[in-house]
Image (cartoon, rainbow, N blue to C red):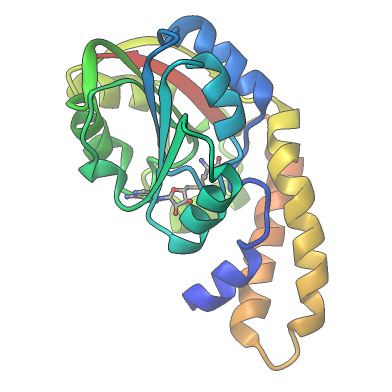
Length: 239
Ligand SMILES: C[S@@+](CC[C@H](N)C(=O)[O-])C[C@H]1O[C@@H](n2cnc3c(N)ncnc32)[C@H](O)[C@@H]1O
């Protein structure tokens, strides 16, 4: 499947993964960056979380980084002129700290949670925290259709125990975790569904796009059917 078809779908969306304001408020109650602190928004996408993150560091800074240039440009354009926000097109694993908080909403799966955590940890101040969300199994049931789908799309998917051991192997302390709410998923899926509907018109003559649309529709269908078996766990880990 081509990147072109993938990014035809993943453009003009307000966010690129589940999340909402209450996700951030929950995490900040534990992470508590100082008002003049620095937050790294690692894999910021189009920048949906930035307006909320800056509220927690009113005298500090949010450094937002994304490896996909169009997202970084979109976020940069949105916050141009705001001295509290710096947007970088680059690799989250190559940033220089120190940061009080690394915020990674749905983005560590790409470099791999296992690989990313120890690198991000080294960017933290001693009392720093990493807050990350990751797609996980959330109960004992593993419906075969979901297992088949995620073994192709996210082979490293685990459960809370897997995350706990990944955090420990990174030399960090697993502080607390929760599961993202249905409204956090809808904040991502509702605009995505509209985009899929719009792009359906372009499918004749574009088999790559047709396959990508089907994969995305399947993912949404699985969540609606089996969303009590998997979800995004939001974890707070201390350095
Ligand atoms: C699932 S999206 C989440 C985006 C955003 N956090 C949100 O919730 O809308 C994951 C993002 O991570 C970015 N990404 C993946 N690997 C990265 C890396 N090594 N460095 C920086 N960004 C990366 C992708 O381009 C994508 O925008």
